[in-house]
Amino acid sequence: MRRSLRQGRSKVNRRAVLHLALLVALVTVLSVAYLMLVGGTAARGRHIQQLQAELFRLQRENEQLEVQIAAESAIVRLRERAKSLGFVPAERVVFVP
Image (cartoon, rainbow, N blue to C red; front, side, top):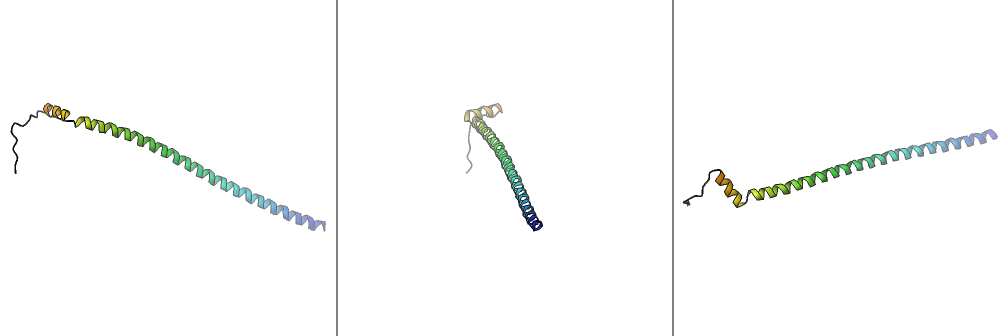
């Protein structure tokens, strides 16, 4: 009778150990999956910050180019440039119908 009691307890202990081992394995797998997700999210966040910095830089460069275009296309500047290239105002303008 004692032997059957020990065997019964042994089966219960083995079953409990098996359940505990499965629980530990499941928690480990879920922890690894969570860490992978967090790592991926952090990497995406860094990439987004880099893209935002590049966007800001390109917007500033675009504004500078717009100012430069406005300065170069001013009538006074165009007249100076034409004069330096040897152009002169037309004395007589002819329109062709």
